[in-house]
Amino acid sequence: MLDHSSRSDQFVIGVDYGTLSGRAVVVRVRDGKEVGSGVFDYPHAVVTGALPADAAGVSGNPARLPGEWALQVPNDYRDVLRHAVPAAIADAGIDPAAVVGIATDFTACTMVPVKADGTPLNEVAGFANRPHAYVKLWRHHAAQPQADRINQLAEERGEAWLPRYGGLISSEWEFAKGLQLLEEDPEAYAEMDHWVEAADWIVWQLCGNYVRNACTAGYKGIYQDGRYPSEDFLAALNPAFADFVSSKLEHAIGRLGDAAGYLTAEAAAWTGLPEGIAVAVGNVDAHVSAPAARAVEPGQLVAIMGTSTCHVMNGDALHEVPGMCGVVDGGIVEGLWGYEAGQSGVGDIFGWFTNNGVPPEYHQAAAAAGLGIHEYLTELASRQGIGEHGLIALDWHSGNRSVLVDHELSGVVVGQTLATKPEDTYRALLEATAFGTRTIVDAFRDSGVPVKEFIVAGGLLKNKLLMQIYADITGLPLSTIGSTQGPALGSAIHAAVAAGTYPDIRAAAAAMGSEPGAVYTPIPENVAAYEELFQEYRTLHDYFGRGTNSVMHRLKAIQRRVQAERHAGNSAGAGIRPGGSAVLAGERA
Image (cartoon, rainbow, N blue to C red):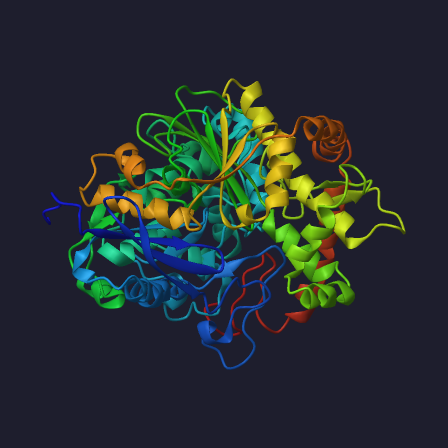
């Protein structure tokens, strides 16, 4: 171990693994000052249509993917260590020898099938062109049928863990995705030795030790009160799934802020950092942002707003909150119950609209004004009175994570006429995501978990109109985190604790956390105006989302059926299996 008695010239690295890129930040231990950063875009981004030919290692047509799949290539994550970390050190202009620890955070639930030594299955001979051998990203929703069965069986059996997740398990999580892998490519399932969260896999790559982190184990792995779902429960889902926990999942669980191990020689060569420095136990991008925002006490709700939004908050008591993503003892900081909720699409929805719903003349006008299309539409929308556009939207373009936990739901805009303009729809979508957050806040409060503060981190905090809309719709004073690198800063705080420079996360957050940025106060007349619109949102929310009308599910079923028929016809000669996995003809059939 290194001597960390002095913090004056010590630094730590936080690495934030997002959906499209990884960012490394160099942070000074004594005061949390961010002194350098580097970013690396994943070369393969999000894999949806077909496996990338270079990764699949084929000269012909790589395997195509059914709908609702979202994969990634694990070596892209290693490349973040090879490129972003050295770039951050160079940007900081510090001696790498002054770095005493490194920590990482990841999108979740993002799963990697691996061999016993940590080799990803897609890097094993014969599996490069099989979709189930790749990383299943958090936004992979193709395991919804498996999630439905897990939920139905758990409810029928009265499983004690189900209320901890608001009564529903998500298709994004470990068990649903694992069951999909078993049922659609049993040979890949058998070849896999460990079913690993990417948050833990990248730590394994850094220090050579496989340690499951308490955060994802609790929120995404149905680990409650020291145990997973029983073998009897898993066997009832599928007899071949009975030993899933004991053979594929179960492993030592590390506390947040502890050291999982120390940097190996190989990882030191990748990063340019000293061999032997502390590597913190893995974590999730949203949860590490709470210490970065100095939001480690009960009632401080942190919303990490980007492509999606994750809402995390500590509580001093256990309550069952409908539709939550989970409540975990020590899930954010030791000694408190960590609550999580979320919205599957936020920035993604805004981006979808600007890419697909805005005519060329708007893009031209934005360019002429020296603005991006989002800034241009925001400026136009900000001139409107509340309700002037006559629209209400449901923010379910990527399904609903909380409080309905139903990825079969889809987006809706009500009230459009021939006079509706792009800025009208854009503002309605901004408001819809705020209404979704208000629904989550109300669910917390109604369940005895009071929300006292609302703090925003993530890329969307730069939109001042959006922030004011959220303050007005929630009725809460809203502050933004001063750092633009909230997750990476939060990881750096965990690295400092793992290195022994602070006794715990609370102490490190107090010293290294970011000062608040902008503050937005609810405007009383806006609060009243939005309350009327929110009631209309709730009417639509319950009508489409609580079983009153299942048109969204029926449309999704029709879409899935037609896509499967077309997929089967197009892939007849490529070895596509009915369940959705693919192999090359003649290869590992």
